[in-house]
Every structure is written in structure tokens, then in C-alpha cells.
Image (cartoon, rainbow over all chains, first blue to last red; front, side):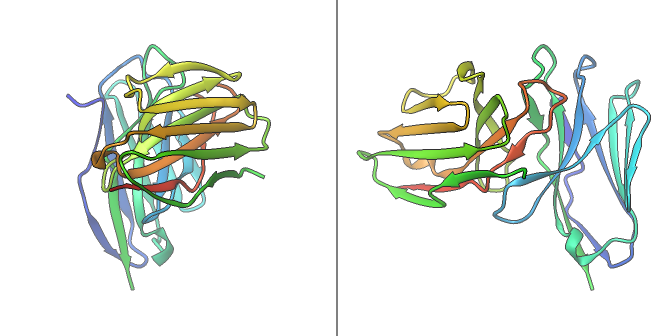
Length: 111
Length: 114
């Protein structure tokens, strides 16, 4: 099983749609979880950290299920500007600062 | 200000050249990182500096040589690279070298090795 595995995508959705990304991680000792977004030919930017209790930031909701080793990101009322690659990121167990990135899921929001 | 700057934006070099990539942050961060990203792949960690000391080298070939002259600067010296080393090189920094600290990425240097 890969360290961090994401939906392969790509996702093509109309404006206003709700879209969900899923991610699983293999090491139960992993401690920290993040969603980053990366626009084409740009650097990754932090979208949200993911907390055990789940967290919401406007149209974005992140959930963590430690028992299932599963992380999700929900985007409601999607906008054209949400088009990007979404990267699931997990800190590598045994070392607190070695982040492991999933392969990313490309989202295209269409008018 | 959560800005990490990198120069140059683009670099083309031959296999016998020596060049350097530069990264700078003025956020008072004590951890800095080099990543390599190939097209349609996620970033891969190369090096981690914590308090100006190299703490992680992810088995990177010696033709890549990192340097941290001070807490704000991180360099990556390149020598005798191969065409397969062509990639986007990303620098990042975080408050400390802790998994809970957000890593802020610079815009990257797009490197082409001929």
C-alpha cells in the first residue's frame, strides 16, 4: 500500500457543484495532515490543516478518520478559481517534518 | 508576510556547468527545505535544514550540494547534472522542523539540463 493514496481523478464539475476528494494513508503513526492546492506551473499552497475533529473554512471542509486512516476534502459551491490539483499531505511517521505528498487530484470547474 | 523567494525563475544549463539556486525567507523560520518536482508528480523531499544544520538528506546524489549560509538563505549548488535532473526545484520554510508547522513554498526554479 502506498504511503499516501488519493483519488486519481481528474474531476470535471460544473460551477456550483459539490466535489469530494478522498485520501488514505498507510502509517497509523502519522501525526499531521494537510490539504495543499497547486495551480498549473505554480508552487503548492496550503489550503487547510486537517484536525481530528474535522474543520471547515468557508466552502471547504476537511475530515480525518484515524481508525480508517482516511482524509477527505469537500468543496461546496465550486468556483472556476477552484480549478487546481489538490494534494493530500501526511507527515511521515518517525520524523515530524518529513511530509509525504499524495500524487494529487486534478479538479477542473467548468462554466 | 508569508513569502519565500527563489532565484532564478528559470535556468538552462549544460551537463558540465556549475550553477546555484537561491532561496530566501524573512519570516524568522528556522527550518528550510529543498524539494524536486517532476511534471505531473508530487514534490519529493531532497534536503532539510534545521537551525542552519543539515538534518535530512534523502539520499540525493552528490551532484546536488545544499548550503545554508544563514537562517534566511538556502542555496542548492548544481554540478555535472544529467538531463533527467530537469524539474521544478521548490524551496520551502517552516517555523520549526515539526510536522505540525505549515511549510510555505517558494515559486520554484524551473531547471532544464541539456
